[in-house]
Length: 202
Image (cartoon, rainbow, N blue to C red; front, top):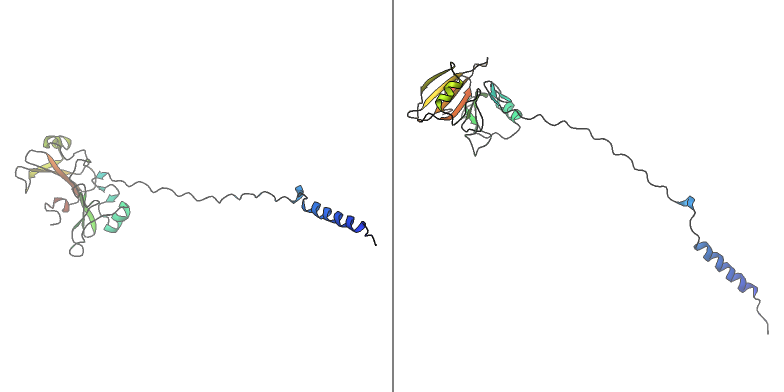
């Protein structure tokens, strides 16, 4: 009987060992993936904050809202909603308010599409010169000594209106309205003749 040679069997086992050894080979350090480099984000241009809105009552207007501004200019300066009905006719008188729920806080009178007056009915702020809602008439007289004239209020029995002339070149006036007890109930600043409209735009 013919015997098979052991050489092919040994050759086959050697080949398998070589293949398996190649499969178990670890990658060399040279084949590693280089670390990713981060690209810095482009710098964003800084935006300067808008300057704060000036809302200081003066004889020349209400802060940034100067007498003579158009309603469009007023809205741009105010940077907040202004509510109010349009005038019945072009160039007519109408009132704009920042807060429709509290019209006594501030009312802006526009006539001929120009800001001509503003009215304040709360003690939240002072008029030019320091007068405020709630003050007594004698306090107002002392604050504006030599600059005012008095007349009876048209609609409030016993009430007095004190009209104060401006202490600058604006040509404006300040009017305080008082009740029968002599307490200031409201005040307004504006250009004549609008500052003297007792009924406002009515």
